[in-house]
Length: 248
Image 1 (cartoon, rainbow, N blue to C red):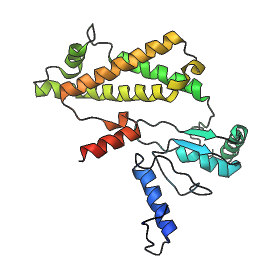
Image 2: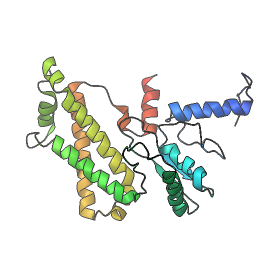
Image 3: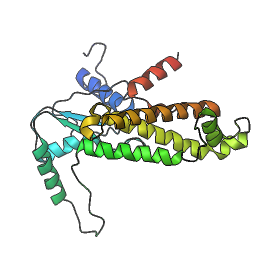
Image 4: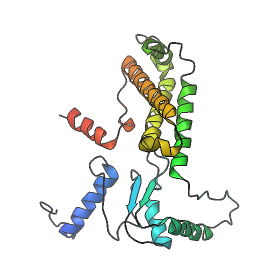
C-alpha cells in the first residue's frame, strides 16, 4: 500500500501517505471516492465533498455526533445534506447524541433556534424529488408547444446567431441547467427505492419520462448556445473519465 511513498519533512511514510489520501479525498473526490479510517478524522478534518459516512462500529454521544457531522459541509449548490449509513443499530444512539448536542447549545443570543432534526430518508427524498419536478415544470411552463428542440432553443437562446439574444437569455439557461442537475440528483437518490418512497408504477414511468425529457432539453439548449458542459451534473466517476480523456 505504501509502495513508492517516501518519508519526508519529518513525517513517516505512513503519515505522508495519509496526508496524500486526505488531500485527494478533499480536493479530488473523483480520484478518491472511498476513505476507510479507524479512530481518525473525527475532528479537525474538513471535506465538503463528503456526502456519505458508513459507520461499522459502536459509537455514542460526542464521538458519534462528530462522526456524523463529517457530512455537514455544503459543497456548492448541488449538496444540501449528507447521508449516514450505520451497520450497528445506532439510530437510537444518534437521537441521544443529537439530544446531548442540542442541550449544550448556547441559546442566550435570542437568535433562531437551531433546526437539528432526524428525518426519514425516503420521505424526505420523495419530497425533494417532487419539489425538483415542480421547479423545472414552472421554469419550462412558457416554452411553446409541442416543447420540442426548436421551442426550447427559441425560449432559452432566442436566435442563436445573435449574440445579444444569447446574452439576454443567459440567466434562463443557468436556471435550466441548475434545475436539471437538481432533478437528476434527487431522482438518483431514490431511483432504486421508488416503491418504498411511495410512488406507484405509473408515477415511476412518468418521472422517468420527465427526467429524460428535461435532460434532452438541457443538452439541446447547451448545444444551441454553444456553452461548455457543466460536469457537476454528472457522477464523480463520469467527471473523472471526461477530465482524463479531455486532457489527452
